[in-house]
Length: 69
Image (cartoon, rainbow, N blue to C red; front, side, top):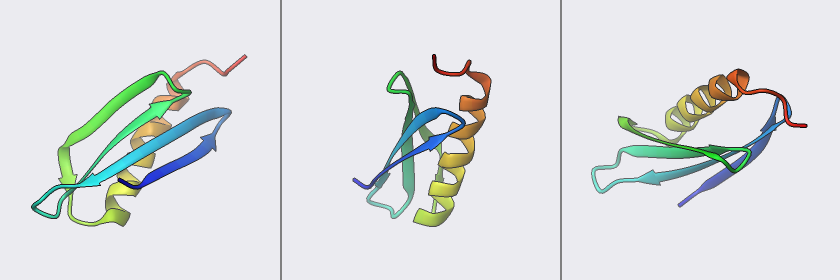
């Protein structure tokens, strides 16, 4: 399972991705090691499109959180 970690607006984002047996990609992400969301309701057909969607959603959620102290 590929893993992507990066910092965004002072938050640490971790994204794990997985490909199912039908070749569709799914993701889960954590923000600052606490939030955990699985994006299996919208599987995508390519790794690049999946990662872009996962990053966009995780960053939107991070924007709603208060800055880390």
